[in-house]
Amino acid sequence: MRLFKLLGISIVVLGTFVLLLSLMFPSTAVVERTGVIQAPIDSVYAQVNNLKAWENWNPWSRPDTTAQLVFSAQTAGTGANYSWEGKFNSGKVTIVDSEPDKGVHYTLDIKNMRPVKGGIELKTTADGKATAIFWHMEIKLGLAPWWKLRGFLADRIYGPAMADGLTRLSRLCEHP
Image (cartoon, rainbow, N blue to C red; front, side, top):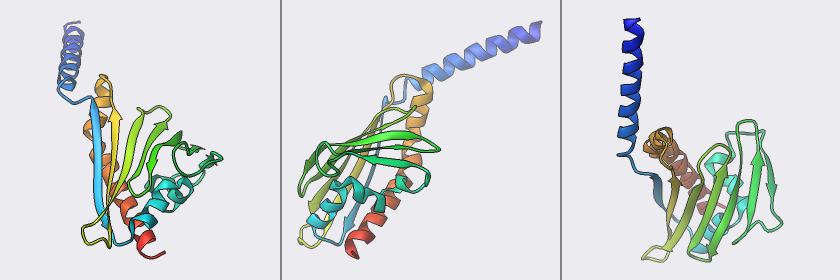
């Protein structure tokens, strides 16, 4: 009996500790990657503004080959979106803002996950021959400790995939 009481108290103390510790973590996770693509800004913009083109470079287009993509009538620019239903997950991407030669901002809603706001910002380099690219995602985590822990690991989870996506986008734009 004494052992069960000690175990119960230990679980409550540990749970309280984890809850208090999670209050120190931020309620937003940000993942960012940058790069330079040796191609004109208009060719890079053409790839990031068109959701159908995302299939060629977006790192999350490859893992679930069973996913069924459904594109809206408009596949490029503000309001363009696609949804997917696959073996591993389902969700929807919507371009909420698109400016030629500046980039796009989008929302990403994945089933059983927190909503994501993202952007791919473009800028011509000083020499005018290349495009600097800044890809960022912001995830609102809320107050739940398990979401905050995932947010703490967000850069390690999503960062390498974003870097891979930028590499693929770079290859695509530099060698069409």
